[in-house]
Every structure is written in structure tokens, then in C-alpha cells.
Length: 294
Image 1 (tube, rainbow, N blue to C red):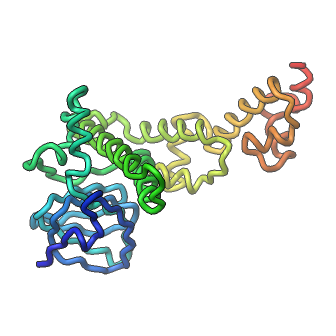
Image 2: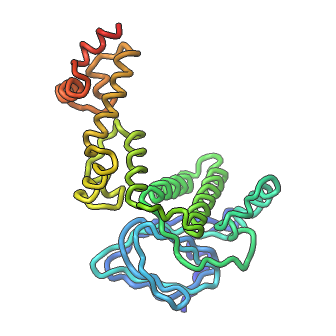
Image 3: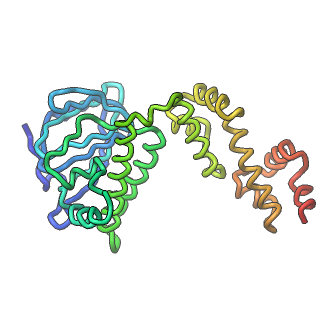
């Protein structure tokens, strides 16, 4: 059985951390192995099978595993799929000093995923499965950590440590919700749609397609359309456009921007489409609306 050393994953002595993006081909097999460092595996996309402590389970998008030094595991990618992962490999000493200082002023030691840095006998019994919205945050955090490590600009080590702490606290919060079953909403789909609606309200000006927003919710387009309308009373396009119109009303009242510039700023690339939708929603044209508030 192969044992991976720090040098195999470019884990330095001064800053014992690395993050690796891996893209695995369909059918690839990674035999059971161990390593002398902690490995956190996050599945960005794809499907496969993970063998850990002699037990094989599925690997799917949004799964998080933590493998301790000396523990054995391996994985195999589906024959009809691929697997894309982030691997965080590190020695616990990387954050030990910072967390010990923080633990003196707050209950940082209570966070489950920070046990990696405080004790040797911590135990992660199963994988953590992130929701679509939690995956978005995880992807953003991991991408920013990787960019800092690649660029190595002034203060990159401090920024990486800060974002690692944020990531482990986020995972701890998710774990607590699972443990306490607080995330088992009476209607899980309604909770997802509610979070998607919040996302749309914050990103209304961006060109996001129905297919993209459905993938974000982890649903097919038809399923998402049906559930979104049940929850909001309207479809995705009208819901987003109504938010855009409200934003344009505010700009028409408070700014001297040209109407075409307002249309572009709120997300309408076509001025005629903006005028048509505005009149249908408000009852008058954007120009007439502006005159009323001069």
C-alpha cells in the first residue's frame, strides 16, 4: 500500500499546506492508500465510489470528506462519469497557533471541524453533503484560497489562513445543522426555492438562464419551474424582471441617467424589451414615469 508523504503533494515546511484541483477520467481507479497529512476532499462535480475504513460509499457533487494521517482510503470514478475535486492537504500545525489565541477569547474549540487542530483523537464518521447554496459558498472559498496560493502576493499566507478558518467554521455550522436535524425542513424544496429567490434578488442584473438557475437548485428545468411558481406565484423570468423593474423605478426617480443606461444597468440588454416590460408592469412608459417624478 502506498503512503503519500508531504513532498508528494508539495507541502512545505514553513507553510505546510497545498490545494490541488483534480479532474479524473471515467473509470479511473485510485487504489487504497494513506498519507502523513490531513486531506480534505471536496467533490465539485461528477460521481464515483469512495472506500474508507473498508466501507464503500458513493461520491457525488457537494460531498466533503476528511481523511486523517494514517487512515486508508481509495476511490473509483463511475464508468459513465468524470470526477472533479478540490484536495486540501495540510499539517494541523498550520492553524494551531492562530486558533489557540482565538480560543482564549471565544468558544472556537466548540466548532466540530476545528477539532483537527486541537486534538489527535477527533473522529469524522461520515461524509458531509452540502446543499446547492452551500456548494456555491464552498466553491467560492476554495477558488479564492487556490488563487492566493498561486499568486503568492504580499500577505497571501495570512489570507489563506483566514479563509481556511472561515471554511472550517462554515463546515462546522453545516455539521451542527445535520446533527440536530435543523436542516430537515418540512418541505426541503421550499427552503431551496426560498434561497434561490434570495439569490435572484441579489443577482437580478446578471444574465442567468433558467438552465443555470435550475442547476443551482439541483433540479431539472421542468421541476424547478413548477416548484418556483408554486412558491412565488410566478415564473423565474417574470420574478427576476419584476425586481429589475423596481430597481429601474428607483433609478428613474433618483438619477439623471439615460433610460437606455438604466435598462442596461438593471439587466435589460434590449431597450425595446425594457420599455415593453416596464409599461406592462407599471402601466406607463419609463419616460412618462420619469416625468411624474420630476
